[in-house]
Image (cartoon, rainbow, N blue to C red; front, side):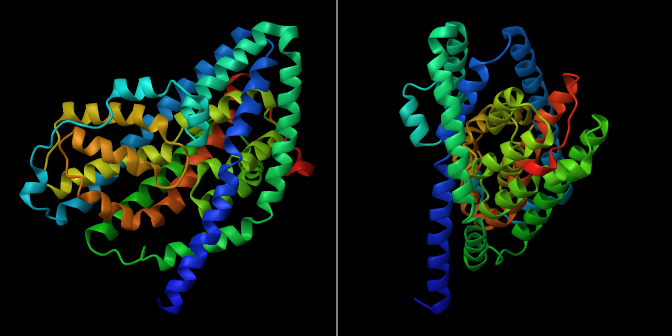
Length: 382
C-alpha cells in the first residue's frame, strides 16, 4: 500500500463514520417530526390540502427535471462514442422491480427493517398513518405527542453535536473522492460528467431561480437559511445527512413547523429532482452506448418507471445505482455501463445532492406561499 493509498483508506474511514452518525438521525427524526406534526394538526382538510399541493408540486418539478436530463443527453450524446459490443445490447430477460413492485414494497411489512435500512418512503407511510391515528385518538394520544416533541428536541441536540464534526467529515469525504480515481474519466465519461453538471445547474439555478421569483421568496434570506444544509449535502452527498440543518434553517426562515413536518420529509421521497435527472441520464447513457434508439413509447415507460422508482431512494450516496441495476435489464439495456457510471458518480453527486436538498428546502417555502402564508426570517436562529 502506497502513502496515498493509506491516506485514501483513512479518509474513507473518517467520512464513513461521520456519514453513519448523521444517517442515524434519520429514522428517529422522521418519527418524531411526522407523528408530532400530524398528531397536532388543526384539521384534516387543511393538512390534506397541503399534502395534495405538495405532491402536485413534487410531480411537476421532478417531471421538468427528467425532461432536462433527457435534453442534456440528446444534446451531448456522451454514450454514442463508447461503442459497446453488440452482444451487450442483446435482449436481456425481464427482471428487476416493476411499477407494481415498487408500490407494494413501499408499504412496510416491518417498520424496524425499513428504519434499519433508512428506507424513507416505507417509514413515511408508517409514521404518517401513526400521525393520523394519533390525531384521531385525541386525548389518549396526548402523552405520545408530548414524547415526540421531547424526542424532537433531543434529536436536534444530538444533531448539533454530530455537526461539530462536519468540517472533518467534509474534508475527509472530498479527499477520499479525489484519491479514489474519480478524475480519471476521459472521452465519453468526461462528456457525461459535463452533461450531468450542466443539467443539474440548469435545474438548480434556472428552474429554482424562476420559482423563487414566481412565488416572491426573498432570495438572499433563502440562501442564508439553506447554506449549511447545502454544504453538508455537497461534502457527504447525502440528502438524509442534510435534513436536520435543512429543517432548522427553513423553520428559522419562517416556515411553520407543522407544514415543514409534512412537506419536507415527504420531499425526501417525492422531490428528488437531482436524482431524477441522473436516473434518466443513466438509462439514456446505456442506450446510447449500445446504439439502441428508444421509441417514444419506450421512453415514456422509462420515465414513468423512474418516477415511481425514485420514490424509494433513501437519500444516501449511490442509491441511484440500485434503481438503475433493476431498470436497465427491464428495458433490455446493457448493465455493463453501471461500473463506468459509478467511476464518475462521485463527481456528479457533489452537484446532484445539493440540487436535491435545495429543492427540498424550496418546496415548503413555495407551499407556504401557495397557502397564503408570509415568511419572516429569524436571523438569530440561523
